Length: 264
Image (tube, rainbow, N blue to C red; front, top):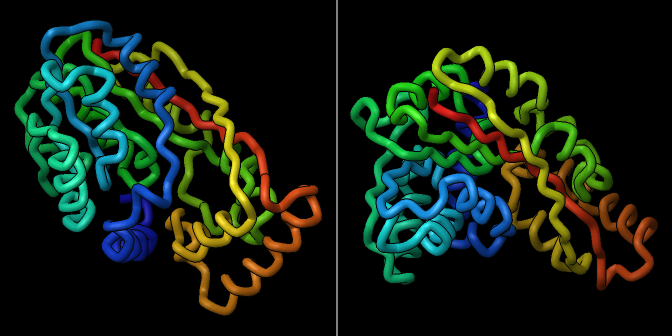
């Protein structure tokens, strides 16, 4: 774990919002389509979704990689999120998966047992060097580890980083690109073969943005004290009205990065 206090607060946060989490966050298909291009049309894929959360990307893995082709191990440290994931996948007639509470650096898998590992929007919660070494252990030679995340710089350029007071200071756990790349390249048995940036179009009303912040769609908002959050939210409203002509149609772009890593 990178910061025990941060992890404790966010665990409590995710337990409270597990049932509504998918409705609060945007799920992008672009990175999953990219994974399909890399993996190709394999008849059988055994993979793990580490930091699987409520399953919003797990469903897309089955949709794009093939329900009949993919078997997915879904790991998270929050039982409430995994319960939500199970309900979601079952409702979508997906059965080729198992869930288990597990730490990223201690996956309950045999050596050389996976064709792929997916880690979406979760790497900042992990002990990354240990997770990468665990990836070397459980991945087969020639298979892939995909890490999809927003970096510190990308977060600072987001609508929250630009306009919500203290957001960048609170969100201290995100990686800088250079540090994450260094940790990947420093792990024996792994090779970073591509770093791809996705530019993702967004559109919301100010009302919708306020609702997301109040629902704490980013765990970062849970790090604010109550009075501090309300004060910051008021300032955020003013900042948005100042920088956008129509608060009912706010358009911007988010950036995220995919690190494609080969198990040598």
